[in-house]
Length: 396
Ligand code: HEM
Image 1 (cartoon, rainbow, N blue to C red):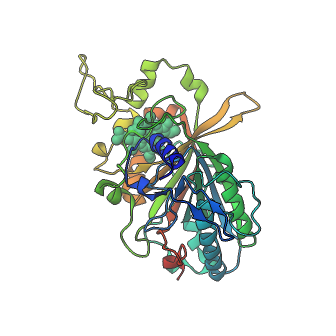
Image 2: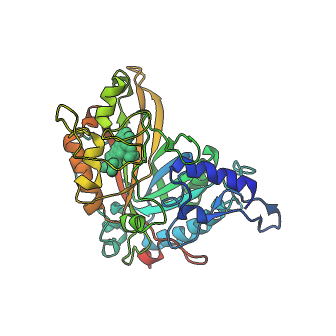
Image 3: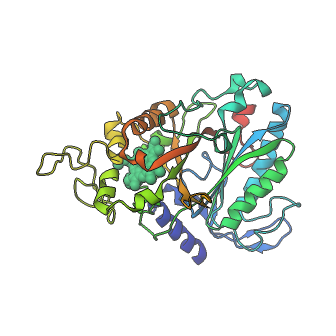
């Protein structure tokens, strides 16, 4: 493996806070050839082909461009044809090559940059328009209404999603630009959300805009716990997963005037170290029985982590792989328009995501600082092998 691949790998592994796991085995570092014979250095490329799509178990790089599309073509045949073209283009883009001969070229010289392109279908794709109702994956459900949310159509729903993640923003943007061009006439972009993650270095957990470490409790890649939490093992979705998207605005002005002890009570963890308020270090399991000298639970009953933890949700767990967003300021008030693009991957939306979200919506102390403004679910398609195309098991 080249030095550059190792450097990028280390940086991204640290960003994800997961260390060396199965995800890293998808990184390639060997020199490759373009079709026209030029030798290129694909260091930092993430393998596109495999049982699972990349971009879920693979380390999360610094940048996210998440784009939902609606299908505007008349038939499922057009959609199948597009998925074939997108599969080929994605395999080329993630290897650091132009998508096709009409590529706009702005990622020339930037390398693969750990680019992953992850494709999913939303529930609306299976409505009456394309006669695909019978092929809807049984687990693909829309989320119910949750108290407190203020959803906007402009950042919710969608027939298709493309999650583009890369170390370099321009590489992530470029890939989506090519896919949108190739899809023009069949799909039309519905919304786009652009996110970032801080990179505290190998082995450290990145912090969210609250200033807290975010991603401490996640199933470790390459483990049975990860597989059962994330991957579906039934056809036609075998090897796929479900993505739950929540765009959550954070009232940073209100958060910033809380004292650190008050902020810690909201989350249930120590701000600096990430340790649970029941003691230990960042990775110490929560002690939900622990109480202070006054008899009050050390991890408050309405704290975010107590209400979200699998221990208090009949074991329901999820992979969280979110990004922060910053869309500037509200011109009327000067308040920041910023927050979290919360992305969770689960094998079963109804059993794993909905109960936890319901509980949080009802009682989470964090709710007085956050508002969900966007929401969507997608069936993340099973991975493909070379010569095959994404969505074959669903579209036939
Ligand atoms: C802006 C919104 C949110 C913020 C800022 C936030 C922040 C945090 C932080 C700081 C932690 C502790 C560190 C960690 O384990 O990663 C955490 C844990 C967690 N959060 Fe959130 N979160 C948000 C929304 C959500 C939502 C919508 C869900 C699910 C529906 C969720 C589920 C979880 C889970 C499952 C944990 C791990 C709990 C444990 O087992 O200890 N979070 N979150």
